[in-house]
Length: 215
Image 1: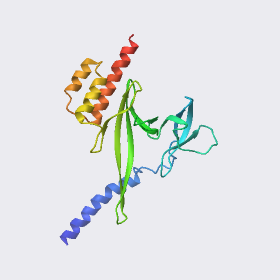
Image 2: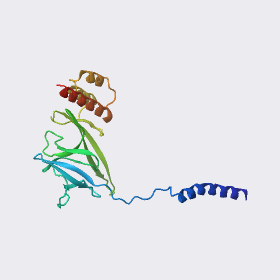
Image 3: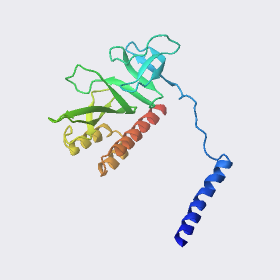
Image 4: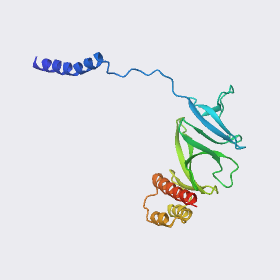
């Protein structure tokens, strides 16, 4: 009997705040408003910039069509579009060759822009087992170039990278060597994660931009 009484008091203590909130309409009302439209732009291979609407299918890549157009939405093609941006992920995608021997352009995410650019390429790799099960993982590669030169891999999440960490660090050090103070700091840097790379590239680009403006 005593236990039942304690249980009843406990349940009532939990229900009273709920009932009070319900009576005072403190619970958030469902928001039935449609999602905001996805907008952005494309830059065509002839350098024309066109404002566009975008949509994200349930599966697959973003699709676009020019604003106020009745055309069907279509995927960006490297034959027609060399760069695009949308508010879906607020990211610029640029068509680039990731290999000097390649004849295929791929859309890469531009993470840093300036005298030195940093790009990301995501490649989904699927594997299939003899028993019919499949799995997939994403290999992520990061590339840099200076003055729109040839891309070079600087980092990846795979076990095999383009050269040792020491050689990749020496390569970036060479690119920023015309900012002696920054280069000296980078020499002593222990981390080589993405956050660190972005910080040094961003700082270098800001340094070069301010030097250009002050001329």
